[in-house]
Amino acid sequence: MRLRKNFLPRTLADIWCFLLIATFIPITFVFELTIVLPEFHDFGGLFYWITLIAGVFLIMNIKGNMLACMLVDTSIKNEILIPPTDPDERKLWRMCSVCETMAPPRSWHCNTCKTCILKRDHHCFFTGCCVGHRNHRYFLMFLIFLIIGSLYTTIYNSIYLWYLHTETYANYFTLFKMVFPMLMFTVDSSWTNFYLLIYELNVIAFAYSLVLFVYHGQIILRGGVIHERSACKYDLGWKKNLEMVLGTKMHKVWLSPFVESPLPHDGINWQGFLKQTPKNR
Ligand SMILES: [Zn+2]
Ligand SMILES: [Zn+2]
Image (cartoon, rainbow, N blue to C red):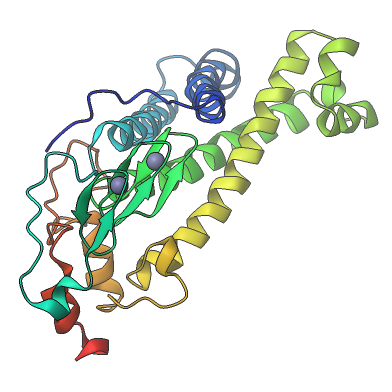
């Protein structure tokens, strides 16, 4: 697997979004470990370890898949691109005037990444890179684990705030602080407000990642990418479509981003593949 040499975010929007998610997740983890967990379970007990191990598993998969999404090179750079000789098949290829090369079907040029991306889905602000053929798996798993992780912390934090510390948080002023989160620090910059901010960010992360997952999930299950969402010409049935993203060992990819799951396609030669799809026979 080829890795990107320069994987850091390039634009201001990418940098801010990346910093938000890169700092918010470890801060949440430390908060849960040091503040919330000791109020639920005694240190060293069975439930303490179960909760801790589940938390470590979730954060490793969130950060690991996010990093893998940023690192794996899914561009046409260093690819051997040989356009087909058959004129009909060649029509599927296009000339990219920026890359100055013939680019394969389903690839699109990204002005931020400054290259054509194989089976390009979209440019992700939070990872600062394009999501395409080779890193689609990591993006999807990043989303799934973000949903589970933020839901997990939201449940614990809800009990912590609204049940264990009712006297501090259960009042109308808390609602005002949640609606205007930046104002809360000008009014009161205590730790209780900081905990409230972490809670709120997790609720937002859960809702936002769930919406993204539903949107991207239904396109993936139809065998498409965002550009093709109105007409998915490469639909092989949901199981094969999922395999095209998660790889041939797709039942194991939830374990870790380090689990190898080879993709059943090279992301370049779609012309013969297109003919084999049931809808295009
Ligand atoms: Zn290009
Ligand atoms: Zn891009």
